[in-house]
Length: 195
Image 1 (cartoon, rainbow, N blue to C red):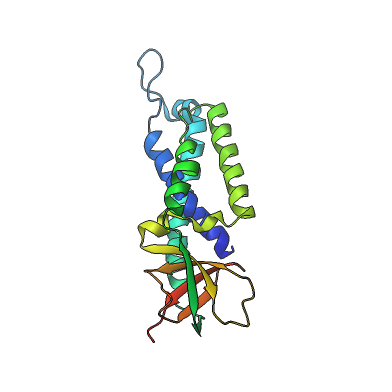
Image 2: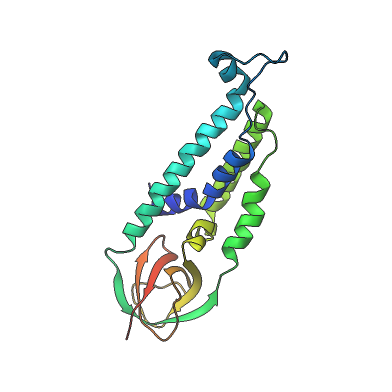
């Protein structure tokens, strides 16, 4: 799986966590107050159980990919390049959270209609992220101390685009050279170097 897709899964993992927390309310009794058997419990809660299992797998994958991203940043970096910081995008993950994640917390996932609506909105969000650079606006990375900055290279014959989105652990500035590693062709993991 590409690093971009891994970061997309991380970006949307708060949806999974919040969905589990918000919808942890299973039908345990029938209309007469009798406790359901296991088979009855599964039948009464099948849409919700399906979404909960999906969200649990999503959370597990997000944790694995966070560990993978931390390992990714330490190997095979190209170094010694000067940059100009164009814009810090500190509000990107906050905007992402409020515009894409919170609306997905749907009220009734214990119906097939609610489950289908949740999955369709998630698919549309995934496609939007796949077709754009929105995956860098990752609330999980922000919580872990990563920053997003738009940069331009002062000189780098390998990189010809005018600007790039840089994900860095900690702040980067124009005063230090950087090491970088490609995430996609226009999104980089960047680490500042001491001169």
